[in-house]
Image (cartoon, rainbow, N blue to C red; front, side, top):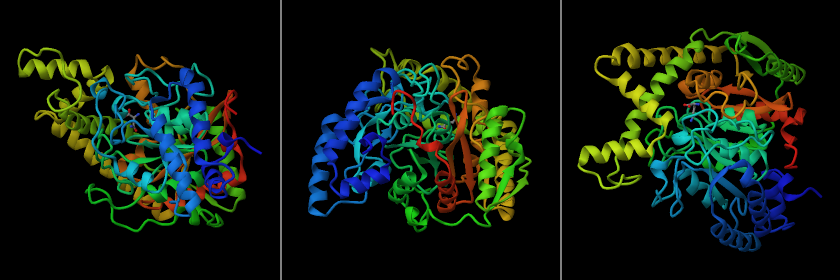
Length: 487
Ligand code: GLN
């Protein structure tokens, strides 16, 4: 029999129900793996050992009594920007090093209500700003495929933890690619739902018109299981949308025959490494064999998505992060002389370099003299990108392309040059600007490192996107590969 860490979330759920093992055994196995590998990977900021074991005992009682929820006894980790009552939420920042939220984020509350158990909070880029998990106050996360490489960001801790099978799945957030990009670089599945599908209540805000919570998991079927519990209207989030939540796991087996797949011409550009492109083209051949119809489509404004994003996201972040003033919560400097000194030193000490760069850029593009030239123009181009997508989806059901231009890169390789770092997001940002659902799944290896394939769908078509990606995982076994040393 496979060891517990080799089983998918779906298999673990079935095993718990059949009482082949207990939730306490499962949680202990995960905690042992975290203990063994945390020193190398640095995937966790907090591990909630005692609480997890207590919850596992309760889950075992509920499973025995037949009153268990759909995720009863399944261990998960949460990206450390989901507020968790009584457990520290740092957002990867010194600013929130001492912050303990008084309430659970809606995502956390829903997963808990479904019976899931929290094992801990995962490392991340500071305030989710980054593409490599190197901006964290708690140090970089390492890629389980090669500890000299980045896991991708900003949800790098969640991605590394799942890739190394320390936890079967984890929550994450995606503002410009932070679920899909680390999924690609760590060889796992990452789902970013439609903007508004999952409540943002209790998710520490970075760029509110782009942020969306989602899942990192070993398979699409596992992501579907979690999305069904996470998704849905929340009166606490005015941008969450009041439409019914489909039974995602039940809709996974939709046939692909006749599915219209669009290949985004702009995704196969000069920046895409040739070996990455070969993996993606090979995946497209698999789709052809499965009966899908492939055609090329063009989104003429898509190449502008990186500059648009790096105006809009910093603008929103500069406003969202104004609340960290050292007065009510978060870091406060020692012995402030006066109010100005309190603000200046609390923020100066609490925020890292990348966060400061974004706040300054954002404040600049929103300032009276530059608002029209930068922010307003960026919003206009954002609308054009959105229209491009809507037009493309009149012709095709899903768009498929690469998730990232290259596989994982060395820690430190891009930290000195923010623009090079920002270009990692070139294929993911479009879906955030347009609010579309997208998933990344592993589709091969280059130099022994995983490569991601991205599927983007119409608004609220998560069921279609998941079914498309699931069909690929039924036909291939890339998603079953576990890095050496962790199998
Ligand atoms: N890499 C992008 C950024 O640094 C996206 C981050 C994210 O999705 N949270 O803004």
